[in-house]
Image (cartoon, rainbow, N blue to C red; front, side):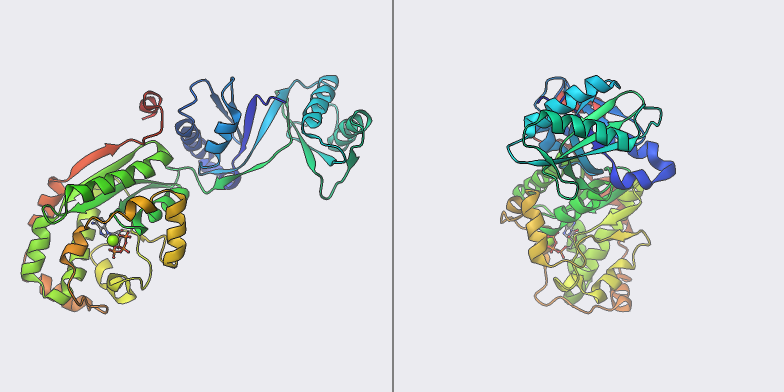
Length: 401
Ligand code: ATP
Ligand code: MG
């Protein structure tokens, strides 16, 4: 049986009353980005459903792409049939027959969003169920746990038949929750944090601190490659590369060694916050996980977080490393993160960083030097790249942005 369309159910976004139009638009954009390699498809969206019309493109490949899109609860390959009982009987029979093997059970579930259809829900279940029983030898009804569930959706313009419901990725469409800056190192955690934030509808721009010549071009390449992976999700990723060498050297000269890491983090956060403001984001995302390293104790976070009121989102805060690595592996960033090049923080890491730094102390040490002009200079010299994913049809993508 050849499906001609895929019916997409929104799930959680359906509950977002007033913002619904915006959600639907963001989801439509995500779908078009993910399906950019299939130029013949058409996307039709309404308030509570979306349809991808296949127009001869490969349905199986499209199903695989749809499973990765945030904001889709479930979807079903479907056929559209006119609202005419004989035509529906024929189409239902053809569809179920194509999936049926000897001895299987079925049930029919009808949903009517348009009540003017001549059969009500029960009559429809009964009429089409009886037609299938009569025409498919050996088939029986099982209402609780059927092998095949024929779903009939009666809508104003037509009736849609489907037999299969596939789970989507869930979450919210990228961009529907606003924009945030992701502090992206070359490590394992921050790309995963970015992925999880995008799953909850955030559009992200990445900020990376780079300290040449202490960190090599290869470590920059690593971050670009990680950005390419994240770009797969939404068709592009803006990456801000901040020159951080001067500030790190000033910290080394001005701040006692056991507080240098705390101070480094504070400077990074101040700079990220300025870049955020410039690009109209409303939050900052990090890959921190509680207690993982010295800079991620509660005392450290308390001392570091002081420099800004901007919401800091830490999607991994309660997660174990092993579970973070599992996700990194699934989203294909683990291998890139494991490349051995130095990060700017590992270069200057003191032999014994404070695990319980005091706010007042770090403030005191920083008070002898005016970091502000250096921070402004770093923001001003930040290089901004727009990273495209490797796998998509680029001409199609360009039209979307
Ligand atoms: P990751 O695996 O993400 O590097 P980590 O376990 O190595 O994290 P830290 O080095 O303490 O932990 O970094 C904590 C967080 O600070 C990172 O997850 C990231 O969000 C941010 N960060 C660290 N280094 C950089 C950098 N060079 N550029 C941008 N952000 C950074
Ligand atoms: Mg790191």
